[in-house]
Amino acid sequence: GKEYPQLGGNYEVLHHTKLLNDLLNRGKLTLREGAVRNVAYHDSCYIGRWNNDYSNPRNALRQIPGVSVREMAWNQRQALCCGAGGGQMWMELDIGKRMNYVRTDELLETKPDVIAVACNFCMTMVDDGVKARGKEDDTEVLDLAELLDRRMSYPEAADEPAVETSDSAGPPLAVIAVRSQTGAPVAAYRTWLEQEILPELSRIEGVGDINH
Image 1 (cartoon, rainbow, N blue to C red):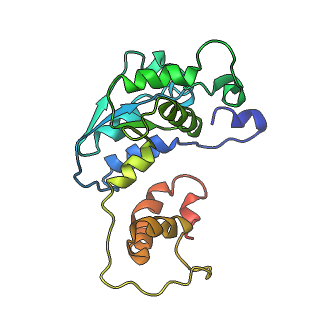
Image 2 (cartoon, one colour):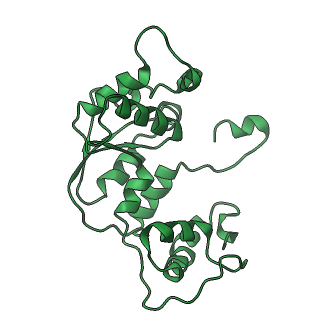
């Protein structure tokens, strides 16, 4: 968001962790109970040092029933980069130790069931690190949004009308995608999104007008 004005774009930009935390605080997202899971959160450089936001991701995680947030010695402003910074995501190193392995080792020291990230670059680098350490069967790497989705209590409908997905009046594609994974009713999802979530986003220009 800080870079758009340099190109003539002046927008209000919300990181998805802030949006999710705000929706949780407003009671718009309902979470269900689940098994206790130890979660290590990795601070990404952009949301952390660049935008100075360390609270929204952690507050959202702490609202998930059963989640215990594990902190590393190097966290928040002192957190190490995932290793993708400076174009290193596309580089092969022949000297030294890969930064994503260094950071992954720190994360694994907390004995987490899940490593939570909030950046697609961090997801790739940390996931590669976990696999390089042979820990992919013991520790999942998930975006905070994925972790929340697993504990979401979605509305249900007794009877679901037929849905023509090719019709312009059909449900949002995101709803169809979620249904394909969970088997939950599309009609209930659509009602929930339109009545609960979109009004919360109406203050952001254009978002409130998106119905499909």
